[in-house]
Amino acid sequence: MNSEKLNKLTPKEIDLCKLFMKYKGKKYLICNELKIKESTCKSHLNNIFNKLYVSSSAELMHYLFTTKGWEICKYYI
Image (tube, rainbow, N blue to C red; front, side, top):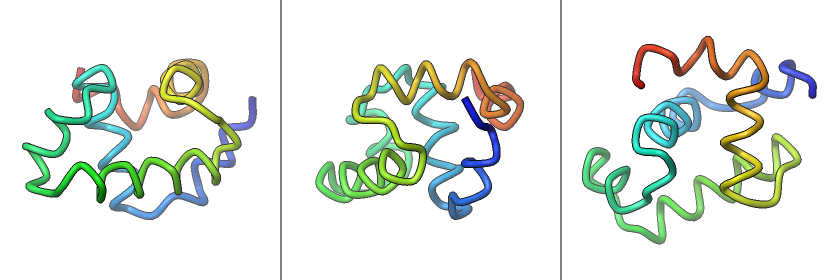
């Protein structure tokens, strides 16, 4: 997988990825921390899925652990 895809993410999307890894994909915890609605969280995640060419939360988690995403997110786990 290509870690260059991570460069397409906005700072807000990077923050969401960090929290996604921290909370192991639990959207309600991400929403609580960011103080956003679940629909907003899902929208951001769909944008991330499209930019990284993944189709599920499990694929996103795998992508982040097997690419440079780990370096971005490691301080939050």
